[in-house]
Image (cartoon, rainbow, N blue to C red; front, side, top):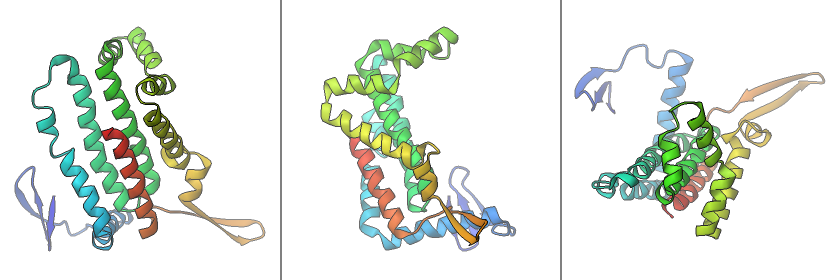
Length: 230
């Protein structure tokens, strides 16, 4: 979607529509409009880092149809998971550069999971079949859950690349602590508690962070995508 003055071009429909008059009138739409401004501010204020994000997108997401143009049947599941991973990358970029750090960690975790799932489905026919058949009843679902235990997957990856497995494990745990799960550290980063008097406090939710935090999110995302590509 492109916004030009008061008109919106919806590319999927190739129609020109005026921005609704009540856009930005509610707290929710004001917030969404603010996020769009934050994205533009990140683009202008962090051009070099934004350029890296763009180059990664060009290298993986834009070239995905070339990578996976002709894939033999046993590797199609792995290809689909990598495609999903690349699409998730764009979503994480959007959250990160708009300052939604707590929410970005959830999808960064998903990036790592999709990449490891894609790898194991390429390496192991047993895992691939279990993943493909997961929806065929309780027994198949239980088998898939057992085989795709995160701890066990990392052990298998360790046998192939010990250093990569360790790095993914460390990053995964950090993401869980900082927001991928609603743990203490993540909530502390996304809320501000002020004492008003001796027995009264004000809790303020941080919906969007500023420039320094955006840069930290970009760095986290770059590390995750480095592991994904490995």
